[in-house]
Amino acid sequence: MAERGEDALGNVEPPTIAGHIAGTVKRLRKERSWSLDRAAGETGVSKAMLGQIERGESSPTVSTLWKIASGFRVSFSTLFDSQKPALGELHRNGLESVWGDDSAGMQARLLFPYDPLLGFEMFMIELAPGAMSESSPHASGVVEHIVVVEGKMELCIDERWQTLHEGEGIRFFADRPHAMRNATDTRLRCHDVIHYLPGAASGD
Image (cartoon, rainbow, N blue to C red; front, side):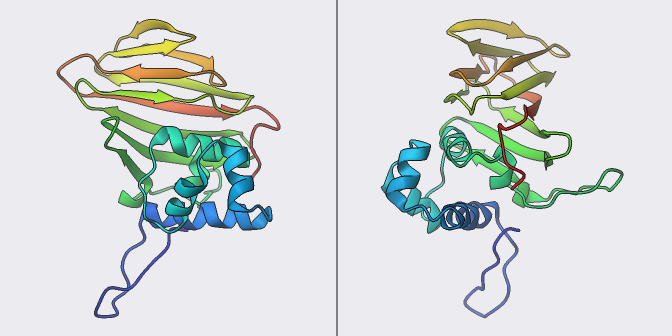
């Protein structure tokens, strides 16, 4: 769950996704008995940056969060939400399940957290006009399914750009660099279903 704090008057503040990310990264590292040096080596994220994230002093980019998830071998949504609703159970996501990457002009809203039984999670991605989001390679066995629901997307896989219009979709192995771009003057929204083949992520 996302962490709760207290304000100057001692009132309990609502949970935040930043607090959840900070607490989750620290917990994952402690459970594995990894030092910050070891975690940096496994994730490709610097020791200094990991320390800042654990202390809640940094707002990591989506690319950095993917490096952390891949290094710890957990699903991406583990960093966003720890609730795993059962089949047939309504899952409500509040503002704490939205992560904004201002540097990329991107917003990711968690729709369904990772389900270890079905092996998938689902996000709604929004890109501002002119924005581009670049992703480092994910863990082996991660497959992304992208469907554009509003606007037009330019997607780069293996250094090859292609265009997806509203209602069109694509799936691809995400263990390679890839990027999405909104070259229009209107917003771009897409569903991103991330599937983990057996062994690609733990049930954490």
